[in-house]
Image 1 (cartoon, rainbow, N blue to C red):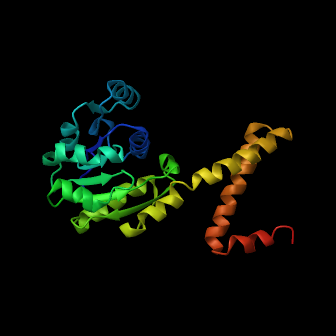
Image 2: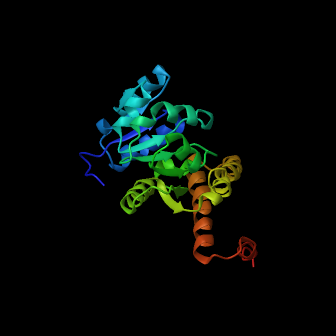
Image 3: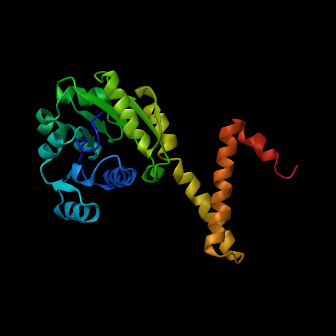
Length: 235
Protein backbone atom coordinates (compact mmCIF):
# COMPACT_ATOMS: atom_id res chain seq x y z
CA UNK A 1 0.00 0.00 0.00
CA UNK A 2 1.20 3.51 -0.79
CA UNK A 3 2.29 5.82 2.02
CA UNK A 4 -0.21 8.36 3.31
CA UNK A 5 1.18 11.22 1.21
CA UNK A 6 0.50 9.33 -2.02
CA UNK A 7 -2.63 7.42 -1.02
CA UNK A 8 -5.78 8.47 -2.92
CA UNK A 9 -9.40 7.39 -2.49
CA UNK A 10 -12.36 8.25 -4.67
CA UNK A 11 -16.10 7.73 -4.57
CA UNK A 12 -18.44 7.37 -7.51
CA UNK A 13 -21.64 8.55 -5.85
CA UNK A 14 -21.79 10.97 -2.95
CA UNK A 15 -24.81 9.81 -0.96
CA UNK A 16 -25.21 8.95 2.72
CA UNK A 17 -23.16 5.74 2.62
CA UNK A 18 -20.29 7.52 0.86
CA UNK A 19 -20.40 10.27 3.47
CA UNK A 20 -20.17 7.73 6.31
CA UNK A 21 -17.01 6.32 4.74
CA UNK A 22 -15.56 9.78 4.11
CA UNK A 23 -16.09 10.81 7.74
CA UNK A 24 -14.37 7.72 9.03
CA UNK A 25 -11.47 7.94 6.56
CA UNK A 26 -10.74 11.49 7.67
CA UNK A 27 -11.13 10.76 11.40
CA UNK A 28 -8.82 7.75 11.17
CA UNK A 29 -6.06 9.69 9.44
CA UNK A 30 -5.84 7.01 6.76
CA UNK A 31 -5.80 9.56 3.95
CA UNK A 32 -5.40 13.32 3.60
CA UNK A 33 -8.59 15.21 2.84
CA UNK A 34 -7.06 16.66 -0.32
CA UNK A 35 -6.57 13.08 -1.56
CA UNK A 36 -10.27 12.21 -1.43
CA UNK A 37 -12.48 12.85 -4.46
CA UNK A 38 -16.23 12.37 -4.86
CA UNK A 39 -18.32 12.50 -8.00
CA UNK A 40 -22.08 12.97 -8.03
CA UNK A 41 -24.82 14.25 -10.32
CA UNK A 42 -26.19 16.70 -7.75
CA UNK A 43 -24.25 20.00 -7.58
CA UNK A 44 -25.75 20.88 -4.21
CA UNK A 45 -24.55 17.58 -2.76
CA UNK A 46 -21.03 18.17 -4.06
CA UNK A 47 -21.02 21.70 -2.62
CA UNK A 48 -22.07 20.32 0.76
CA UNK A 49 -19.38 17.61 0.80
CA UNK A 50 -16.66 20.01 -0.33
CA UNK A 51 -17.55 22.63 2.27
CA UNK A 52 -17.95 20.19 5.17
CA UNK A 53 -15.00 17.87 4.55
CA UNK A 54 -12.59 19.97 2.44
CA UNK A 55 -12.31 17.23 -0.19
CA UNK A 56 -12.20 17.33 -3.97
CA UNK A 57 -15.47 17.02 -5.86
CA UNK A 58 -16.46 16.61 -9.49
CA UNK A 59 -19.56 15.98 -11.57
CA UNK A 60 -17.46 13.71 -13.81
CA UNK A 61 -17.49 10.04 -12.77
CA UNK A 62 -14.60 9.35 -15.12
CA UNK A 63 -12.42 11.84 -13.28
CA UNK A 64 -13.24 10.24 -9.94
CA UNK A 65 -12.61 6.73 -11.29
CA UNK A 66 -9.19 7.80 -12.55
CA UNK A 67 -8.24 9.58 -9.33
CA UNK A 68 -8.32 6.92 -6.62
CA UNK A 69 -6.14 3.93 -5.79
CA UNK A 70 -9.25 2.68 -4.01
CA UNK A 71 -12.44 3.48 -5.92
CA UNK A 72 -15.69 3.14 -3.99
CA UNK A 73 -18.74 2.39 -6.11
CA UNK A 74 -21.48 4.07 -4.09
CA UNK A 75 -24.36 4.45 -6.52
CA UNK A 76 -27.82 2.83 -6.28
CA UNK A 77 -27.88 -0.78 -7.54
CA UNK A 78 -30.00 0.08 -10.58
CA UNK A 79 -27.30 2.51 -11.77
CA UNK A 80 -24.31 0.18 -11.41
CA UNK A 81 -24.25 -1.27 -14.93
CA UNK A 82 -24.61 2.12 -16.62
CA UNK A 83 -22.01 3.83 -14.45
CA UNK A 84 -19.48 1.03 -14.87
CA UNK A 85 -19.96 0.74 -18.63
CA UNK A 86 -19.49 4.49 -19.06
CA UNK A 87 -16.32 4.59 -16.97
CA UNK A 88 -14.76 1.17 -17.41
CA UNK A 89 -11.69 2.50 -19.24
CA UNK A 90 -10.79 4.59 -16.17
CA UNK A 91 -10.99 1.67 -13.72
CA UNK A 92 -7.56 0.17 -14.33
CA UNK A 93 -6.15 -3.16 -13.17
CA UNK A 94 -3.91 -1.50 -10.57
CA UNK A 95 -6.92 -0.07 -8.72
CA UNK A 96 -9.16 -1.73 -6.14
CA UNK A 97 -12.85 -1.24 -6.86
CA UNK A 98 -14.95 -1.49 -3.71
CA UNK A 99 -18.64 -1.97 -4.40
CA UNK A 100 -21.14 -0.77 -1.80
CA UNK A 101 -24.10 -1.64 -4.03
CA UNK A 102 -26.53 -4.06 -2.42
CA UNK A 103 -27.51 -7.21 -4.32
CA UNK A 104 -24.99 -6.66 -7.12
CA UNK A 105 -22.73 -9.74 -7.41
CA UNK A 106 -19.08 -9.48 -8.35
CA UNK A 107 -19.56 -11.54 -11.51
CA UNK A 108 -21.91 -8.87 -12.84
CA UNK A 109 -19.34 -6.15 -12.19
CA UNK A 110 -16.65 -8.27 -13.88
CA UNK A 111 -18.87 -8.84 -16.90
CA UNK A 112 -19.47 -5.11 -17.39
CA UNK A 113 -15.81 -4.13 -16.94
CA UNK A 114 -14.63 -6.88 -19.33
CA UNK A 115 -11.14 -6.92 -17.80
CA UNK A 116 -9.33 -8.29 -14.77
CA UNK A 117 -10.04 -5.62 -12.15
CA UNK A 118 -9.65 -6.21 -8.41
CA UNK A 119 -13.20 -6.04 -7.02
CA UNK A 120 -14.29 -6.14 -3.39
CA UNK A 121 -17.93 -6.24 -2.34
CA UNK A 122 -18.93 -4.99 1.10
CA UNK A 123 -22.15 -3.88 2.76
CA UNK A 124 -21.45 -1.59 5.75
CA UNK A 125 -23.73 -1.22 8.75
CA UNK A 126 -24.60 1.89 10.73
CA UNK A 127 -21.89 1.68 13.45
CA UNK A 128 -19.24 1.85 10.71
CA UNK A 129 -19.38 5.63 10.99
CA UNK A 130 -17.58 5.40 14.35
CA UNK A 131 -15.35 2.48 13.43
CA UNK A 132 -17.51 -0.09 15.24
CA UNK A 133 -19.25 -1.71 12.31
CA UNK A 134 -19.50 -5.39 11.47
CA UNK A 135 -19.03 -5.50 7.74
CA UNK A 136 -19.13 -8.74 5.73
CA UNK A 137 -17.07 -8.56 2.56
CA UNK A 138 -16.03 -10.86 -0.26
CA UNK A 139 -13.19 -10.73 -2.74
CA UNK A 140 -13.26 -11.00 -6.50
CA UNK A 141 -11.06 -13.47 -8.33
CA UNK A 142 -8.57 -10.94 -9.70
CA UNK A 143 -7.11 -9.52 -6.49
CA UNK A 144 -3.45 -10.17 -5.80
CA UNK A 145 -2.40 -11.20 -2.31
CA UNK A 146 -1.16 -7.67 -1.65
CA UNK A 147 -4.41 -6.13 -2.87
CA UNK A 148 -6.38 -8.45 -0.59
CA UNK A 149 -4.30 -7.33 2.39
CA UNK A 150 -4.67 -3.67 1.44
CA UNK A 151 -8.44 -4.01 1.10
CA UNK A 152 -8.71 -5.67 4.50
CA UNK A 153 -6.64 -2.93 6.16
CA UNK A 154 -8.89 -0.31 4.64
CA UNK A 155 -12.13 -2.03 5.66
CA UNK A 156 -10.87 -2.54 9.22
CA UNK A 157 -10.98 1.24 9.66
CA UNK A 158 -14.75 0.87 9.80
CA UNK A 159 -14.88 -1.94 12.35
CA UNK A 160 -14.81 -5.71 12.19
CA UNK A 161 -14.26 -6.73 8.57
CA UNK A 162 -15.45 -10.31 8.13
CA UNK A 163 -14.47 -12.11 4.94
CA UNK A 164 -17.16 -14.51 3.72
CA UNK A 165 -18.14 -16.39 0.59
CA UNK A 166 -20.25 -14.30 -1.75
CA UNK A 167 -23.01 -16.92 -1.54
CA UNK A 168 -23.38 -15.92 2.13
CA UNK A 169 -23.52 -12.18 1.51
CA UNK A 170 -27.28 -11.64 1.36
CA UNK A 171 -27.89 -13.62 4.55
CA UNK A 172 -24.97 -12.02 6.38
CA UNK A 173 -26.01 -8.48 5.55
CA UNK A 174 -29.60 -9.24 6.53
CA UNK A 175 -28.14 -9.67 10.02
CA UNK A 176 -25.52 -6.92 10.11
CA UNK A 177 -27.20 -4.18 8.09
CA UNK A 178 -30.76 -4.77 9.32
CA UNK A 179 -29.81 -5.91 12.83
CA UNK A 180 -29.47 -2.39 14.29
CA UNK A 181 -33.12 -1.72 13.44
CA UNK A 182 -34.01 -4.32 16.09
CA UNK A 183 -31.72 -2.84 18.75
CA UNK A 184 -32.60 0.84 18.33
CA UNK A 185 -36.31 0.45 19.27
CA UNK A 186 -35.38 -1.61 22.34
CA UNK A 187 -32.93 1.07 23.46
CA UNK A 188 -35.50 3.79 22.77
CA UNK A 189 -38.08 2.01 24.94
CA UNK A 190 -35.67 1.74 27.86
CA UNK A 191 -34.60 5.37 27.46
CA UNK A 192 -38.23 6.47 27.50
CA UNK A 193 -38.78 4.38 30.63
CA UNK A 194 -35.76 5.99 32.32
CA UNK A 195 -37.02 9.45 31.43
CA UNK A 196 -40.53 8.66 32.69
CA UNK A 197 -39.03 7.59 36.02
CA UNK A 198 -37.25 10.90 36.42
CA UNK A 199 -33.71 10.04 35.35
CA UNK A 200 -31.86 12.73 33.42
CA UNK A 201 -30.78 12.07 29.83
CA UNK A 202 -27.09 11.51 30.52
CA UNK A 203 -27.73 9.00 33.30
CA UNK A 204 -30.39 7.23 31.26
CA UNK A 205 -28.01 6.79 28.32
CA UNK A 206 -25.24 5.51 30.58
CA UNK A 207 -27.50 2.93 32.19
CA UNK A 208 -29.30 1.75 29.06
CA UNK A 209 -26.46 1.77 26.55
CA UNK A 210 -23.98 0.46 29.10
CA UNK A 211 -26.30 -2.44 29.89
CA UNK A 212 -26.70 -3.22 26.19
CA UNK A 213 -22.96 -3.07 25.58
CA UNK A 214 -22.16 -5.30 28.54
CA UNK A 215 -24.82 -7.81 27.53
CA UNK A 216 -23.42 -8.03 24.00
CA UNK A 217 -19.89 -8.53 25.29
CA UNK A 218 -21.08 -11.25 27.70
CA UNK A 219 -22.77 -13.15 24.87
CA UNK A 220 -19.68 -12.87 22.68
CA UNK A 221 -17.27 -13.92 25.41
CA UNK A 222 -19.27 -16.89 26.71
CA UNK A 223 -20.85 -17.96 23.39
CA UNK A 224 -23.77 -19.22 25.47
CA UNK A 225 -27.32 -19.43 24.23
CA UNK A 226 -29.00 -16.10 25.10
CA UNK A 227 -31.94 -18.03 26.59
CA UNK A 228 -29.55 -19.70 29.04
CA UNK A 229 -28.03 -16.36 30.00
CA UNK A 230 -31.50 -14.91 30.47
CA UNK A 231 -32.25 -17.60 33.06
CA UNK A 232 -29.34 -16.33 35.17
CA UNK A 233 -31.21 -13.10 35.84
CA UNK A 234 -33.01 -13.29 39.14
CA UNK A 235 -31.77 -16.80 40.02
